[in-house]
Image 1 (cartoon, helix red, strand yellow):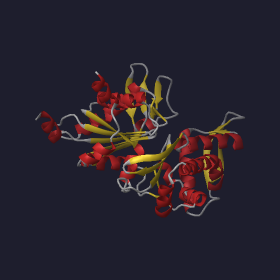
Image 2 (tube, one colour):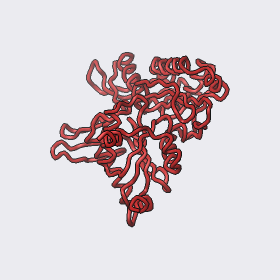
Image 3 (cartoon, helix red, strand yellow):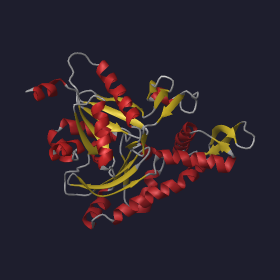
Image 4 (cartoon, helix red, strand yellow):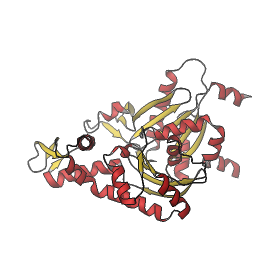
Length: 353
């Protein structure tokens, strides 16, 4: 009886806890949080100063007593306490915006394909501590495939490449499960580091991560507009003089800077296809593969992959929110939730007692 009452008043929540961004979906309301996975902490009193976009504005600009924490590394929680505070902040904000009686929510949250039992337990503990009633873990690629409306329950091959901030996951899905997969620590953040390294080696210029991200986005827009040689201004510190310096860089130079990392992702896709059963490869060849995540917005990445693999590639519409929208669809369908949720380490512990 109490469970039925809780279900009636609770607002079920889907969380895409990413290295770069955290997105939260609330049942009947849609996506209510889309913020950077960053927290600013005042070391003097151990208080949180800012979370999300507000904290992102502080990156590289803080005095010694303020620490900027990115509590997720390569899609995995690296700082339990800060992640808990960040999620609690977001969940509290959702509930402040609603009125009346609200029970603690059931939460569906995504995890990487190579998640360990210890990491699974860390995710569950963080979400429960942040105020959830029940936690269901779902593999990120499965949620993304559902968000992309792929027929994952059919006995056919569906290939998805989820190109995130800290992790690129390549998976072949059939009958609601992952048949073949590869997880690479090469993603959006690595491309930013490539641009930082390129500026250092080519121009003796030290730039920040935020500047590299901005250059990557601007270069993409320039290339899309057919202006590969358009000049982009890049500002930082001259490593020889220690003084401020501005240099011009073209879109084609940015492509050159990230070339090696993009090639590694293409190789990862090829090696995943090599371990995929031939029947599923035949399906993928016919139906193509789907690109999702922030990295899917990189200009011409779909053409580069299609040329290397001889397989049609489609970038999913609104690829940044695809995973969390998939979690929303899972929350709407109890049968689908039971089918795709991976075993909980907490429930396993309880059963063994």
